[in-house]
Amino acid sequence: MGSALTVPVIDLEFEELDSIVLATDGVTKVLDLPRVAAAMQEPTPERQARGVLDRALGAKTRDDVTVLIAELQEWED
Image 1 (cartoon, helix red, strand yellow):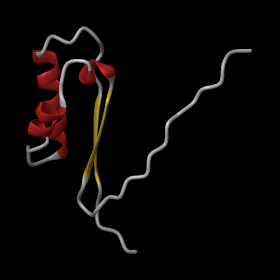
Image 2: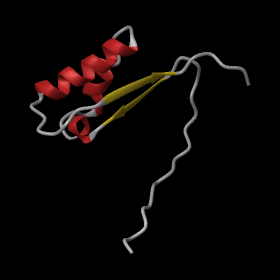
Image 3: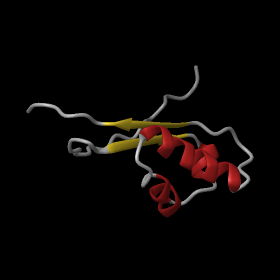
Image 4: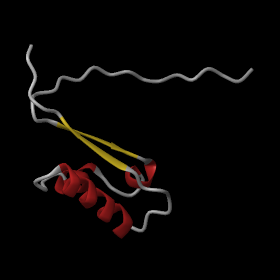
């Protein structure tokens, strides 16, 4: 039988209207955090994702590129 998968777990605190970026290594291998953060200045999640995608493709990534932006909505405690 193969080795067990170990997944690191971290606790984060979020506020209403925060965004979460999930991206494949086709993005993380070619973009640093300031370049991703620049894309996140776009006004909508769709444009933010397109900005990350375009930056990764512009950096000549050689891997697949997938970007998911989750914008947290209002909630009650």
